Image (cartoon, rainbow, N blue to C red; front, side, top):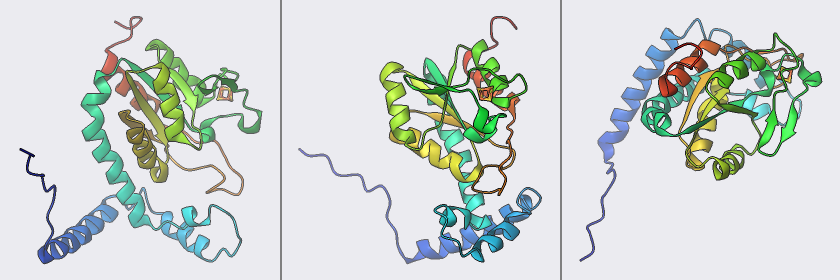
Length: 229
Ligand code: SF4
């Protein structure tokens, strides 16, 4: 006998009222809580609304701060949901952002079979520093590609028990985690501390992240590296 289908959710009129009240509360409290972190978004958003150029990233730039908050919540929920599965896989790969490379156009990254890798050309480059941390845990890192789901699927063909750590900005980290989910790979992530790439700055500058958060994720999964234990 066929099993009865499970109705995953059922919505009635009351749902919309509850959702409306809940969303207003979350937005109000969230934007107040993160008022310092988000204080420049409104000015940037207004500037982009008056920008009549036909740049291809305009709709991406025209993102109101409420959606930054929603993306941040999405990221945090992914962190909760993915954590166990992330810690159970054998391999981990870092997905690195271009904008953190210190040398910009002169970055000496090299194309390898599974993506572009840092060649450690600049001692002060944050990517170099992150890869030194990754080395302690035997973790590879590849620069992020536009077709991220395909990139992760390709890596997964080689490393079947795979999890990824993404480093990205508020508007792209959760979507990267959605790409990893599409590829069937659990992910965790760490934010860039600020934006600096060409989407946000007329003269792009190097971004940074909290490297110790990357290390904490790896340490939680693998324990202390041999040299420190
Ligand atoms: S250290 Fe790595 S990421 Fe940084 S500029 Fe050199 S090759 Fe590029």
